[in-house]
Amino acid sequence: MGQLVRLEVSDGVGEIRLERPPVNALNRQLAEELGACVSAIRDDPNIRAAVVWGGKKVFAAGADVKEMSDLDPAAIQRHIDPFQEGLSALEQLPVVTVAAITGYALGGGCELALACDLRVCANNARLGQPEILLGIIPGAGGTQRLPRLVGIGRAKEIIYSGRTLDAAEALAIGLVSEVVEPAEVHARAHAVASVYASGPTVALAAAKQALQTGMETDITSGLLLEQRAFAALFATQDQKMGMASFIEQGPGQAEFFGK
Image (cartoon, rainbow, N blue to C red):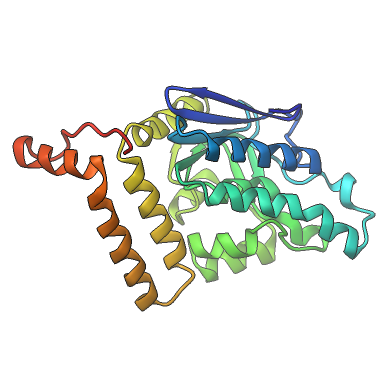
């Protein structure tokens, strides 16, 4: 898609590849190219799940500090816009997304991982929001997505201290979904994504919307959203196939078509 971010598609899984060595520092160009890849995934009905991959050595070590250090408040506001827009678009994709994390996922890199549904992490990875050590705070979703994932108390301690978490702690607090050997991260993330790509993707999209929107509203509105999404799925081919298969063969045997 661009010089710093590339989209590859195989067997229904779109892979967003960050390619800005040595540490995938997130600059404005990378953010804009990331947004373009996310748009391409959203517009391609053949992409049924997605993986975000930074490479074998590092996921993304944070924002490009040199690019923004001398900006004034008005300029930094314009600078951060494509980061927030791109990560929000990634979060709102109607497919399951998996971050494949090796090495560092710090600052903007951690925020990128937080915008995904699931996070597969190498056992030697390090995650965190160290912006406070620069005299600033996270600016691309860290203060909002992290507490929704790990709870407000833990998020405060992580953001206030700026410390990095190892993979074991990240798993224990629910920041990552699973931890594997570094050499297994890419393959494992694709294996997870492939399961969802071959699943009932219309229902998965409905579940994702209900979960994410429900977190932003009161429970009465959330329950109404859930009820309507539940009912709408009874117009899908996957619902007919899934229930017929359950009645005839028992659970877990259905073949889904995403329709």
